[in-house]
Length: 346
Ligand SMILES: Nc1ncnc2c1ncn2[C@@H]1O[C@H](COP(=O)(O)OP(=O)(O)OP(=O)(O)O)[C@@H](O)[C@H]1O
Image (cartoon, rainbow, N blue to C red):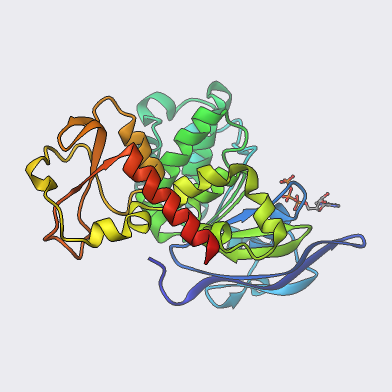
């Protein structure tokens, strides 16, 4: 969970190319552990905004402070060693092995050799590149997805508190992309880090973001949680930007606890007699999408109290006295439709 002191503060950032303001008066504040996704159509200024955070581009107006210090007071090289940076083109050093590529920044920072070696091994293993197999290979011997994993390992190697990512999964096919994204999201160390990620992929933004900054023509259209952008769009641009994927985004954003409000707080349940196993049980914090996926598994229960596929929702943490509830497609979709209608009309 985010702590109080801001890690990154962007104040009124503006950048021109010629007469065109490609980033215009953009501000945001990020706390430790938060992930901000910069989202918007091609050319809207996402990369320019990201690169102003680590001084790869200097703003024409506005300031960036990191841990309370103006980045202009720091040498750009020094600043960048404390900030992990991952780009779509990966940018691995072709004449360095995989292990050497991962070790570059910790070595520059003077970390002890044994510590660097141990950290490199650990990261390669965690990103599904066993070091005994891949450590001595060269980048050209790896697939695009594997190179992208090395790029991530390299950005994480010195354990920087801040990571900036520019379309990090952009060059990959959709299946590899989804699986690396899942690995990325589940990396335990990312929970402590402050992450800013550029994408134009709406699903990716909703999967990874704590908050989204939606840009158009260099200007902030809305800064908020995925839930806020979806159900409280600030203007027509925001509403239309999500239109084509609205249903999928609602399924990924709403949680069982959001749609089963009455069911989960009611003490009237006789389902406990039928409750069989926890392999088909979801917590109330699971998304509707996760519940639909579990319902479609062959392992979904068929039996009392319902003859059709059925999963269970465990009681909320504050009501351990309640029994798990059965959930079928029909009951889930009814609750989901009711919740969407309520959220859309408030
Ligand atoms: N070095 C440059 N010189 C002139 N114009 C530039 C330069 N870099 C970027 N631009 C322009 O600034 C605008 C914003 O570019 P930027 O790369 O930040 O957009 P983006 O949202 O990241 O786009 P994409 O999603 O296509 O990568 C674009 O119109 C681009 O043409």
